[in-house]
Structure formats: structure tokens, C-alpha cells
Length: 326
Image 1 (cartoon, rainbow, N blue to C red):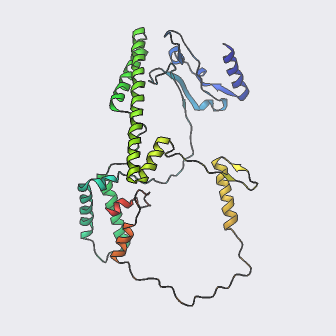
Image 2 (image 1 turned 135 degrees about the vertical axis):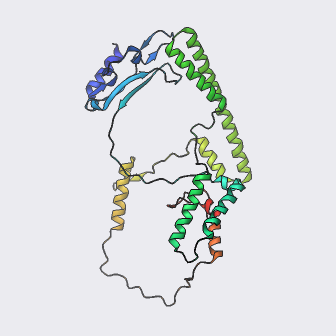
Image 3 (image 1 turned 90 degrees about the horizontal axis):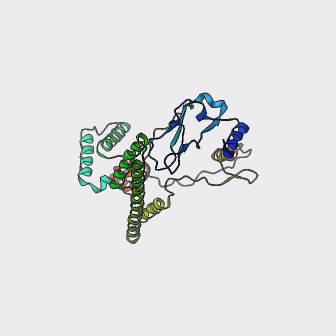
């Protein structure tokens, strides 16, 4: 024990915490979390603490020495069994790579032929709902069979050479765990340095490429690509920020739960108004407005489709504007 150990014990005693690593019997190699630079000294300096009342939820806690994380610390993992309340989630819409409908003419032609074949034998007097259901089924089936799903890689800047070096580093990590010699540690350290150098090089090259693409898009007047690249480079893409909301007393609410309650309170007071005692007398209009009630023409439908904005989230039918325009 030392001063830091006494401080940890005092902290756990004060707040009713337990050190999970002391609850299970494991070999010493599965308890030591840190290796000194000399390669011989190892000790336990990383801990996972949890409330003593939830001790039954912890089924195991040990060190995994084979985790290749390029650090002198080993990975400490606690298995925690928790039963969460089951919630019904709305089925999310499938996002496909719709750029293929624009760039690949053969895919666009195949899509048009598929729709023509489906609707060629359709009865003109058929029910509108039935025809719409068949249209949605045809579009979604074609997208599932011919379009790739849209994926966003976590680190798109890592090249194949770097991934190969990472795999080689993982092999050397296993050698160090099985046979901890000076030569194996030296090989692993050299390979880890190589991976860091390659990753830094790939990241810088990717930043340069993104900057060039952003500059070209700005010169071409493509503001959508410019803003998209700026969000990616600044790291703000996909981050949800809570807007400040004040309560009745003017205090700012910071957490999401309190803001939700405040919004519910606001709309409850605004919308749930009593019926006025003396409602205003609104006279009828002198003339009727010129509103068309006849069926839509083909030209009006084509004009409405042409005005659809691309790159928007699909509705409940999972059909995007690019699929309708194709």
C-alpha cells in the first residue's frame, strides 16, 4: 500500500463503493494492469469501482493482455449484467447510395424498365391505394437488390498500408504476451512507432485532399459540398447540441429531461385555453375563392416532381426524391 492506495480505499469507504478487481480469483497476470518501461516490473494501478449494492450485477473483472492498444497499460474489463426496460423503437428508414441512380446510366435504365414492367399490366381503374402500395414495393425492392447501403466509415483516412501495419502490430502483441523477451518488446515498439507514423501521414494527406475538394467546390459554386466538407473537417458533423431553454423564473435549463418538461409545460399552457365566452361573429365571404377541384394533370404532377429537393430524408414510404425523379 501507498498514499494513493489509502486515498482510494478512503474514497470507496466514504461513498459505498467496491473495487471489482478484488472480488474474483484470477492469476496475477490477469490482475496487473501496468508494465514499467524496463519490461520486467508490473503492478496493478487501474481499478473499476462500483456501488456495493450492485455487486450481484458484476460477473467478472480481469485484465486482457492481448488487446493491441499501443500502451503500457493493459485493458481492464468488467462484465456487468443489467436488465434494461424494453422500449419499442420506430423502425428507421433504410438509406441507400442514391448517387448510383445519377452516375450509373445502366442502373437508372434498369430502374425505369422495372417500373414500366410492373405498371404495364395494371388496370387503369384499379384502386389508388393499391397502385401506390405496388409502386412503393417496386421502388423499395429494386433499391434493396441493386443499390448499396449508405455507410459512413469511422476513420476514412486510414489507407490499406496502415491497416496492414496495424495487423502486424497485433501479431507482435501476441508474441509479447506469450514470450516477453527484450527482442519481442523491441520489435513491438518499433512496429507501434511505424503505425503511428503511417497514421499521421494518412491523416495529413486526407486533410489535404479534403481541403482541395472544398476549394474546387467553392470555385464551382457548390455550397452543399463546401458546408459538408467544413462540418467533417471541424468535427461537428452529427453532433446534437441542446439549445438553451429557460424556465418560468428565467433560469437556464441545461439537461435534456428538464428542457423536455419545460416544453411540455409551455405547450400545455398555450394550447389548452378555455373556450371564449363571447366568440367573434365571422361573416361568410361574399365570393368563393378560385380553387381547382378537378383531378391533377400529368403536367402538374411532373412539375411537382421536378421541384422536389434532393438529399432529403424519405417519408414513411422510405422513398427518396432521387428515386422518384429517376
